[in-house]
Image (tube, rainbow, N blue to C red; front, side, top):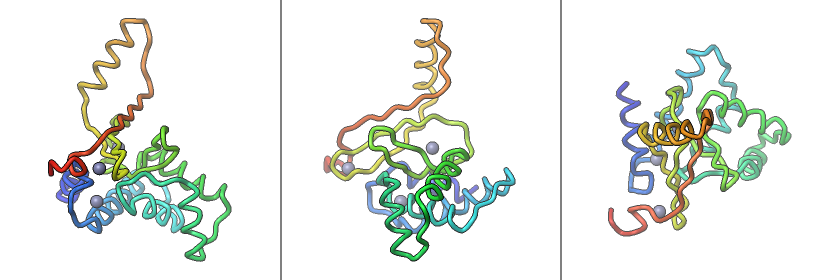
Length: 167
Ligand SMILES: [Zn+2]
Ligand SMILES: [Zn+2]
Ligand SMILES: [Zn+2]
């Protein structure tokens, strides 16, 4: 549980100076726990793809992941890598940033939450927002139109506090 708190803390300020190795360590531990609980297999390739997504807090494209794997001699066919990404998405271990067609690690995998992101146009970091009230507001507004919301994604672009020199 302590590691979870740490991951959540790091997630709050991805652009700030921090020991990113800890982020990766925590994320891996959580991912292993999620897979164990669900009886899902965290294979070597899935693990490596997960690590590559977690290389930083900047969303990374599938092509970049493929290239890295090739460089490492883990050369996998694109469909294999896409299947690994699908697996990670399915278990909530990574999120897909639609506007960038890229993937970013989730610091709170396994918990039911929405993909709300603040994306900095300067450093490229994507900061995941945890705001249940926001989701409720959207559901409420949708409901007033007789629409039942199921999937929600919100991608807000702008400048993060670090890049704005406020941190
Ligand atoms: Zn980090
Ligand atoms: Zn998440
Ligand atoms: Zn920034």
